[in-house]
Each structure stands twice: as structure tokens, then as C-alpha cells.
Image 1 (spheres, rainbow, N blue to C red):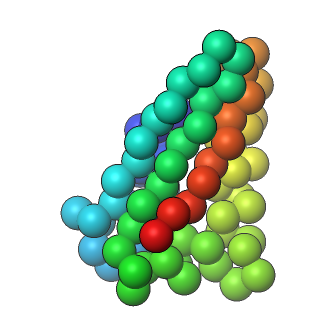
Image 2 (image 1 turned 45 degrees about the horizontal axis):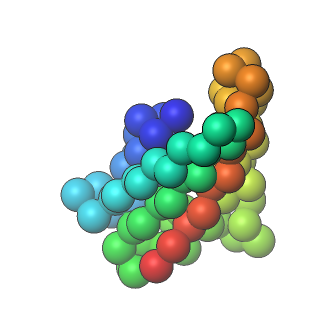
Length: 76
């Protein structure tokens, strides 16, 4: 799941080296913290949050196959 979010984020931003995804795994849930360069924040969030919502939808679908819950947080 971490690799999926990292791949999507690197594809969207101008500075792919600044992309960092941290995975915090619990018993039934996974928290993914996505950090990008400040200039690329808008590209990851998108207009009205549409790209961020799409990233969350894709990861939730992937996590559902494994019987887990996932939360994607986009941090500065």
C-alpha cells in the first residue's frame, strides 16, 4: 500500500525526490502519512481535493481486499 501511494504521488509532483510516505500499521488499520514539497502540495490535493479523494479511494479499495482499513493523511 505504501508503494502504491508513493508511486501515485511521484507521478504527480515536480520534485519526486521530496515525496515521503510513512506507514503506521495497527491491528486492523494502516495510516499512511504522505509528505511532499510545499510547492507540490496543490498537485497532490487537486482542485477541491479531487486528487486526494481519488488517492484515498484507490487505497481503500486495495485495503478492502486485505480486510484492513486505511487512512491517507497529506502532511506538510
